[in-house]
Each structure stands twice: as C-alpha cells, then as structure tokens.
Amino acid sequence: MSHAAPRIHAAILAFGDRTRELSLVLDRLAAFGLERIVVVASQVPAATRELLAQRAQVGQTKLEFVVYGHNAGSAGGYAQAIRIAFSNPDCEYAWLLDDDN
Image (cartoon, rainbow, N blue to C red; front, side, top):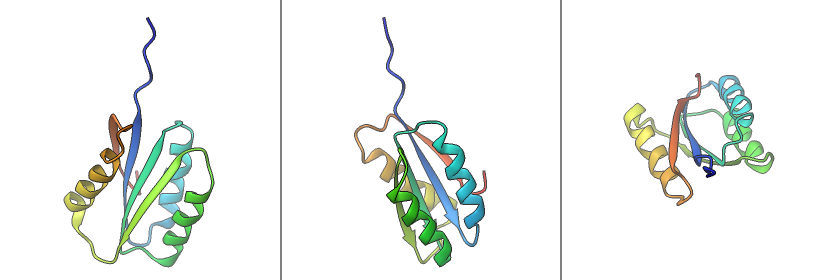
C-alpha cells in the first residue's frame, strides 16, 4: 500500500523591513519541495515587494503574495494567510511561519 505525500502549503507573514530574512526563509523552503508558498506582507518596503515579485516568476514552488499597507497583527495576518492557503483545494496542511523563522 502506498501513501501519497501530504500536500503542504507554507503560509508566511512578512512585516516591515526584513527583506533579507524573508529571502532566507524562501530559500530554505525551496528545499522542501512544497507545492505552494503564500506570503502575506504588511508594511513592507519596495525591496520586499520586488523580491516577492521576482520569486513568483521563478522556481518550482508556486509563490503567491498579498501586500497590505496596514498591519493587521499576527492574528489578522495568519487568518488571511490560512484563508489564502486553504482556498486551493490541493492544500491539506498549512505550515505557518514568520519572515524571521
């Protein structure tokens, strides 16, 4: 009997000027072969938005992101990230991370 690997999507909160940290998290996640990465970014600089746009164009893992000009806090950000992750019927589990994990 074979078991299919669980379909895990990562859901990351990004906040403020932590572009370098987010880049490292995205690099590490690429090694896991996840189906999809969702980033909810709040009050991030242009460098972070550019990083996300660039990463969404390349790589084997699908990257989706939403940028907000306001900070909804951890609870609000995670609620949005979870909604986005599970809006895809292929998502069985959401791996919740911060941009500085």
